[in-house]
Image (cartoon, rainbow, N blue to C red; front, side):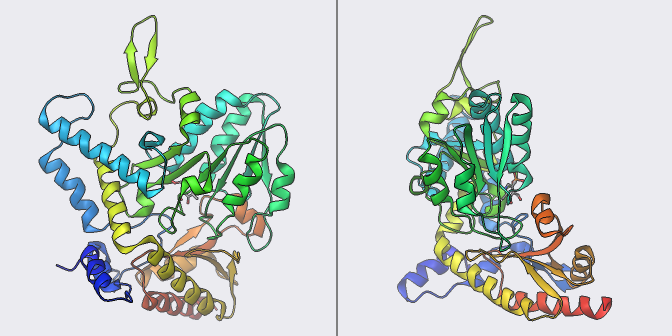
Length: 422
Ligand SMILES: Cc1ncc(COP(=O)(O)O)c(C=O)c1O
């Protein structure tokens, strides 16, 4: 059987390692299906990624062999399920280089992780007249939770501006850090444009004023090595489904001292130490933030996804996607009428573009008939679209299994769109 793990073992014996694209593609059953009679070209990876067999097998094996609820049972199945769930936490800890496994809280996804911080840390620390600082590049899930908090507390949401390339203007960001700023929350990578934000510099500037920083890593975790200790961020949020893992599971990393000081998010089973009608005391980290039965199978599937990424090597994935980005950027730019939206100096595998005189939804519909899946719309980042004065873009986003031939298919598809609409 050809698997990436097998290919990477072989590659270690015969350097320099070729990127094992054919073996990788065989690991993803969905990639062999046809769409409208054409081979699927899946370029919607920023929305969600497809799953390798290893992830599906990990979940299925659990349900077939050792499924039970965790943390509460003395019977063997419960012990085995608990072990697998906690091993998934340790694997996630190593994946982002957190100092301790109790700094890893399993949640539903990035959205829940950000809401958790807004509703616990935020509610505890933000008062009337205080400020929360985000950037103009954020996904709605890194805007709305802070708006809800600010509205409730009589606080103000401040927004660091971007330049026309789609980069955060650091001097302006620094100027907006005020004595009233209680938290900064910025994305590591913009989902709408692919810009890589200078989060280490942002953390440095904020920490110089004792302001904690949450980094939304939804788009970074599958695309680049993440080291939360090196970034020195206070919180880091990401989603399993965007990194080849299951839906419904994600991660909030938080520094121990913050998580210890924060009140719980939701109340229920597992997050308590003792309950009486008079008083409840809370469990230790990270369980204080994991009320109720968690997504046990999801965490185990996420661990399998982390293993899968590790077997290829996240640096090699980044290099592969970087090649696809360069290829796509060059070829799309050369098409008359195409404008690429977002030209940051540091970018990863996301290309947003518009075609003069054609609505992005029409681009998406024609490409779909060719078997090519791209996203069209505002990408849950309406303020970014507003900044560029456009309602929507078409967005091709690359994953570890995409190929140069698929970039060519996209380019041919766009020529077809032009033929139909012009
Ligand atoms: C940058 C960014 N942040 C947050 C999210 C929300 O992630 P989820 O829907 O998995 O909670 C997304 C999803 O597209 C994203 O791209």
